[in-house]
Image 1: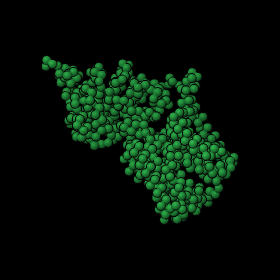
Image 2: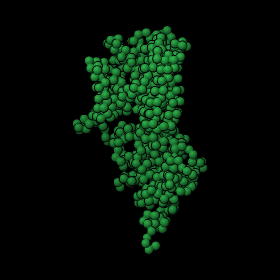
Image 3: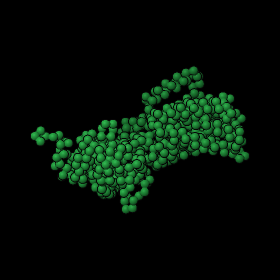
Image 4: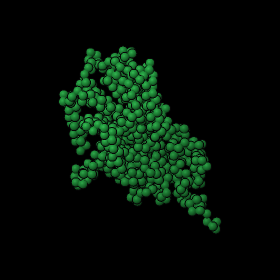
Length: 240
Length: 331
């Protein structure tokens, strides 16, 4: 997936200013930046939740910029939300099957089969009764559940919006394991996250946003020593 | 545990059906008429269950669609002498097409705005029923609608209508339950619970809402047609906004998370006025207070509330009869 010069304004606020980068199958791309730098907006633009003002998105050589979000989902763009969006009045089974329905709905790629439910639930350490209401899961479990559901759709591109926020250490390890499954299944993962441990450990490339603008891109080691990034997070030193 | 539950459910269903089938022999003719009307209402409540209970779109226009189904049958049978069964199909299809057109326009609106617009629809429809005299008979209504019949068999008594309606009601309930469990039903419920998440899971919400609306329209069309045959006279005063509200109350009373809700809700609201007939003047008061109490105490309706109480009791008694908590629920 290639993002080319995505732009989005909300009134006078520039949420995305000519942001370009590519997502590579089987690689994890980190997206970081201070609060309000436009990370979630970018995910909304890619998944089609928000319409963009300018720019283009290409998926497997096809332009998907003008496709509505359900079509993008059927083409293989899956996402999770910062606060899990599950079907709160339905049981766990209906929630899971929503992912399986989508997997059945889209054309399967040869040699690219969806991960097994058992494998995903084990990686997420989720145990439940299918007839139980989804609200019997804790917040952390719901976030893991949402990733499991996204993976069940056999995505080409997986967008994760702060999957580790609000989770305990054990649950964060589970997020790690689920991302590993996504990578193994050759999905291109875009990870928005504030937990630097997670970002630095599992990302192959990192893009840094500030005020909707891309200020740096590189492997984790480069980003850690990048002056512009340090300035964006910590402010300019007096002596400099 | 699941299979055991399923088989007890099926046995219960068969027993209930057998009892229902014997009912006409045990009740008065008057009661039979009440039950027949209850069946008609139940079909409309099911239409509310599909569009509001499952899909979360509050449509107040159902009474109007019910009326449209009735008028189509009345016009087809009295003016064009169409066979009753064909008129029934005509009502279902005609209502479906009309509801599709309304849905295509109104589902550009979201949430409450859709609900408000649907009130406009039922009022407009009632205005047309009331005033388009050459076609609908205007304030005089339409009479002399023939009896329902297929081939040589004719529905000529309350008892034969009872069995006809029972058959239709069971068929529509089964279809609704199948939808409820299908991927289509899941996409309905996904829209109800979280439209953005639904879209991100590949659900075309505009299209899917229209599908749900057309299904609900077909139900109303069928109910309307059967109502026309049953009462042989129809007038615009039946197809009014408060009737839609009543369907909604019936649905909320039972609960809208499963098909058992509409069954319980419709039955109670149909029979309560009969049981409490001595309280005639106070019935609306009781009814109104009941709705308020219900929403405060059991927002999920009698079925939802009953389930909660049952689970609570299970937990209290040590969870022995409660849920099997350790199964990891795969397959």
